[in-house]
Length: 121
Image (cartoon, rainbow, N blue to C red; front, side):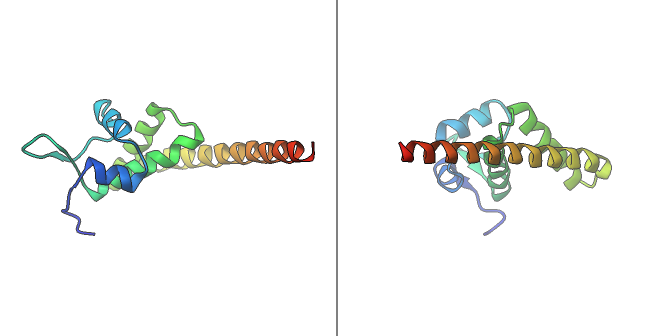
């Protein structure tokens, strides 16, 4: 995809499976703001913006708070800018994600057991 191409909010919503309301909220709270606005005031997103939104979308099922999401994006930005001083923090965040995923998988297993129990009744 063309790196300079911009997308309006509807296309971004479709690509990320996030609602228009959620995208507007993320902009309002400055979690992920569009890279630009059109002359008419429409939000314009880049491929980089979409990638950031997809990171956020993947964090949601793991129960991350908006502040935790914001911190991860800050760490990613710093590392991308050449600041390897936050690499240890990224490793901590990754370890936390692994643990959250383990707990979620455990909960899913319990849900499967519950459904199986109901099927036997």
